[in-house]
Image: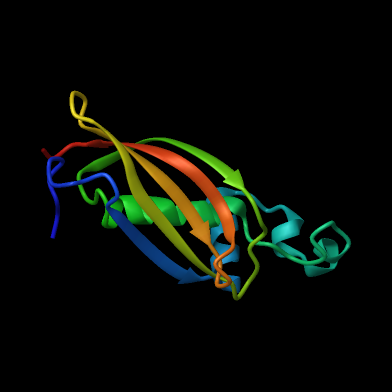
Length: 138
């Protein structure tokens, strides 16, 4: 059920969960144009600090957009701003849960500030940040 701006409260939360696959990384590389061998070439990646391939940081961060557009605030919202900190690498097989939580509302502009977080299957933070969303539906 879609909520109006007035129905959304400080502390409201929503999540999206996905397990990262080889295909996810290949498709994200194609769509984004980011063909860094750290993401695509195991032999290259083994020689790096990460000692193996990692997913694109923005792949995990894109799941935040999924939550904002689909769940909270949901359809009719406009993603205005996002601050991100990448805390830990994500690898094929990791299950990422993207979460958003309402932390502030601007009633005059109908804007919502959200805490945004992505955690892995060990509940360790891989992406941390804050988003600003504008409500188009009142």
